Image (cartoon, rainbow, N blue to C red):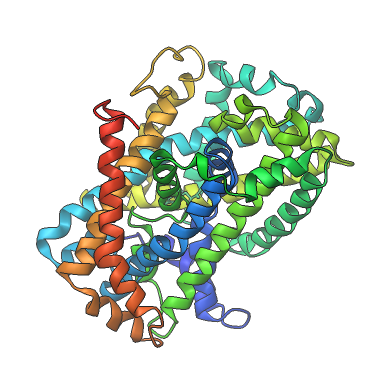
Length: 463
Ligand code: PFF
């Protein structure tokens, strides 16, 4: 179970009935976890790397089908049992507690490297606040920053400290209040920057690259990347949405809440792509090597956008504050999951657990950070250390958890159990589509993609 500390964080919106209905409360709380670096940093670089429009199209298709189905399943399981992942699977079927364990292990892998990227965001924020925006827009700024040994680790510690402090003190009201204001500000500012970006000279080619599917770019790797991104971005296949569902009011409309979170999350990712990809074309001529630069893309391209903007330093500083905020709310929910998992399994006190989790995460995060510098010769399955952790969690463990969730809902507890939970609040409009997707389409599709990608990774097949 999530500890009592997270309860107010999730319930504040529910209780605050003067300004929010309880349904909106759940949507906002879940969106706080879902919207983070996955939307602002990871989605644009994957879209740029995997052929723009084709990636966007596949992502949208699986978001409205699989994303919706899985999020609905997880939330319904949570609301039905009133428990977090570990407890929920066990409560519904004792033999399935292993699925809860695998799901709970995912945040343990993601959290450390999430802090590395969070540290980069802190560094850029400080750079913009201290008038170094011009330097940050330089071509070699990012590369020389991440390849250092000490500095990225220092910023990673700052990010980890901020996250741990909030989790340790219990998630305070300030954060929830702030998120009500800052999330809408993030949306408005992103739209403004996107408009600026797409209207730059040369950006039109980027808009076309991003929006027009090029079918020759289709590949199994693209589908796999889109699937991993979907799980990551919507905080699926790791038990988070089960926990959030467990705090949800029985009267709230489950189906439409899930739709809203999905639209919100995908909308922010879409706008981020619209900021970054056209900017790559405007400022770097749509260079193939820049488009496929991966994790560094946001940090290379955005400073150039701000540099060319009127009041660019202020815009840059405000934007990175918002990115940091979105990253922190997601990191808090990641760390909280790990902490509450340990809390449930041991008799240790919460502050001690927080220190242990923070220490262990730092130890795991340091190699990810050094993998861009002194350890850049270390390659795991052909990936840098950070990319390797990202690959294991998003492309290996999450598909397994998602597959198990489909089997569990479709064949173990059966779809009627999910439907009755959904119908406790409102008619289940997509019930037929849901049944077919959860029982047949999603598990078969996930299995095919997963097996072919693993075989390809091991060099057994080549396509
Ligand atoms: N969904 C978050 C993002 O897009 O950045 C990442 C994340 C947060 C994943 C919390 C998992 C989680 F539990």
